[in-house]
Each structure stands twice: as structure tokens, then as C-alpha cells.
Length: 265
Picture 1: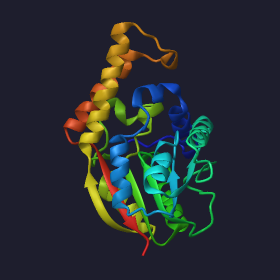
Picture 2: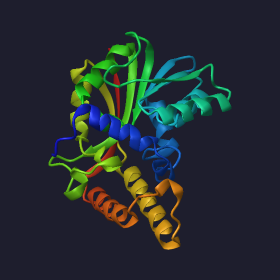
Picture 3: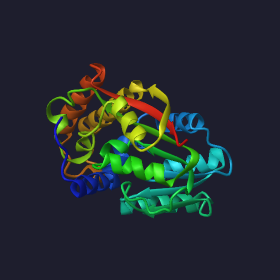
Picture 4: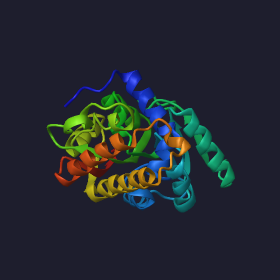
């Protein structure tokens, strides 16, 4: 497996990529495979209950946090490195009338800006694979969880041997997948932090659907000649080549998507 860029570099790369309008255009509102349906599945499996305090790590534009607050009656703190994402998320919470129950903070998953035992649950969707210091991030998640608390993660998984071809070493949003791990490696990281994995579910089809959706949007833009301002400077042909590689990796079982739930005993 190719080594990712140095820690701060890959963090800033991914934060900048997911802050961009191009990502919003291509990925849609939820920014992760499975969309809101898988977020609901994650929250239900993690046993979220009204009144709990939940941390959303790598909260992006706040879609997950707002859904959890609205549908599960919890309070949510989101943490993210992207300034533009934090502004969008805060504005969305205010517009939804949730400014008193959903707050967003600038912070690093490997150094969470919260005291120990602050949260009843932690969620992290399609982001753990981007953390250069995965053991540190797992330890921080365990640290801020209260005893009996649960963490729910959904993320890209890569079979042993890593990504094929250009997908293993690209910059930008694809490079954020270059350090994805097999599902059992994520489980081992959580276990090493003192968490007990209680549920593992494969959702590879969700990743396949997202890749297909991105491919379809790129093809429409190329055929129409629409150079959306968000995609200024993007090589559509090159992007299509990469989505083709990604689709083949999913079809071959090299790339997948997994949900894990773990508990702090």
C-alpha cells in the first residue's frame, strides 16, 4: 500500500478538498456513500436515545449532525478542519433553528478539543480513512466517550494489497482514500483503544452507487459542455478515468464500504 503524504499535508489536502464546491456538486448533500439512509442505520445501530450528547467527527457541512439532532432528539457537537464547511454547517444549524443543540468546532480528530468522558456517542462517517494518525484518532474517540458509550463508523475499506493503479497515489479527494484499510484493521484500531466492536456490516453497494452517480454527473457535464464554476480547472476526462478505476475496484471486491459499531465497556 502506498504511503500517504505527511500528516499535516494529507489533513490539509482532505480538508481543502471537502471544503470545495466541486465536492458538493459531485457527491451531493451527504458527502458519503449510503447517504442519509445509512446515517439513520448507523444511529439506530449505535442506539442513540433522546437527550444524549453526540460527537460528529469530521462533520463536514453538518448534514449528519442536523439529521441526528432532528430525528433522534440528541444534542450534537461537530468537529472539522475545514473552515468553509464549519461556516456552512453553522449557518445550516441556525437556519434549522438548532443553534442551541448543534454546535460546530474547528478541531483535529487526533487531538479532540473536549474533556474526557464528554459524550454518550461518537459518529464518524467516511473520514477515519483520511486520518494519518489512526491509532491517535481511535484513542481520542475512546477518551471522550463516557463508559458504556458507543462509537459508530462508516468508511471505505480496501482489501489487503491496496488500491490499484493511479487510485493508490492521487492528490485531492481520491488521495484521501489511499490510506483506507480492511475492515478488520479498523476493528483492531478500535480494539487497541480499548473499545469492543459489537457490530460490523458490509455496505459495498453504497460505495458502488456513489461512484456510479459521480460518473453519471461527470458525463452529463462533459456532454453538455457545462463548465460549472465549481469545476473550473477540473479535467473531466481524467476524472472519468479515475471513476472508472474506482468502479472496477468496487466490482472486484478491492474497495468496499463498512459500518462498525463499538462500545466503551
